[in-house]
Image 1 (cartoon, rainbow, N blue to C red):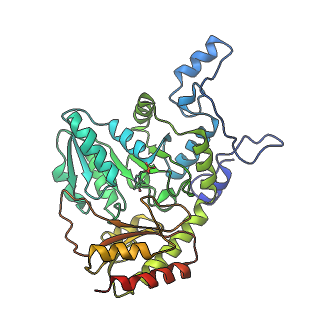
Image 2 (image 1 turned 60 degrees about the vertical axis):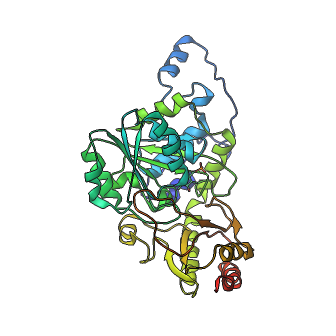
Length: 391
Ligand SMILES: *Cc1c(COP(=O)(O)O)cnc(C)c1O
């Protein structure tokens, strides 16, 4: 019997597996294929008429048994009506937004969103006549003042990319409900284990499965989880655009999910340990980690999340740009890279883009992804490099 969300560990291990025939493989096989053939016009027509539903085999682009299993597993974790898979997290964001925008419409977007969300809004949607308005992510109930007759959706992210503010998710989601428009939240950081935004009143969850879900930096994929109100609309848009993940990626995401709980519990612990240690170093001015009081929205994190991922930032005391580069270059255990959520530690200087409210911090912002290395090695690595920041 598939498990439900009352016990995530069981669901992660038991769901999304081959049918229980006697003598079977543990895992879903990698299925490659475009064409699916039928023995009669009647069965072809019934597949065609049901092709938007997860579970209907019709043509490779609409999914196969393994991708349907993955969609069901993720939908169960998110408490969603359903999940639609995409070829990347960015594709999940862009197709979810495409579902709701039209020329002359107004879209509210949190000012701390992932860089490519901003690039899609400013570079593509605005060219199509959508008015993009960025709002302060800590706006709370004042979001009501920004909603217009033409507002078509509200985009949130929790926590913010690079800067980690946690918004008041239920307040913003309720404002969207009151205006009969969807709220869409990028919840890549928390994964469904640490936050279930649909339970908090959001309508649509988008996430990159390239990060913690697949978990080994070997897979590009995205997902859109939606409630009953918007599920069919989103699925039709994704299929109309023609986006889908590859079969190898579906296999890797299913494999990654088996260990999601132990990985997230470890990253929570190791991330807090390194962030605490960094906070004690004289070069560090502020730790931007949702589980720390110094992080804007920490109280919302305590209320709405059940754990913290291993990705956070620190603000260093003002120093030169060259010193930051030297510090990053001196780290041996932290690769320099834009991604995160794999097994390896990463570091990245962040330059926050802001439209609604200027970013006024003078010290450099640096993001850390804590991997599965020994935390003592990571601390020793940081300890050796930190003196390069002394002015
Ligand atoms: C990486 C990331 C994405 C994009 O996902 P891809 O799979 O790389 O396309 C979206 N949102 C957040 C918060 C991310 O960190």
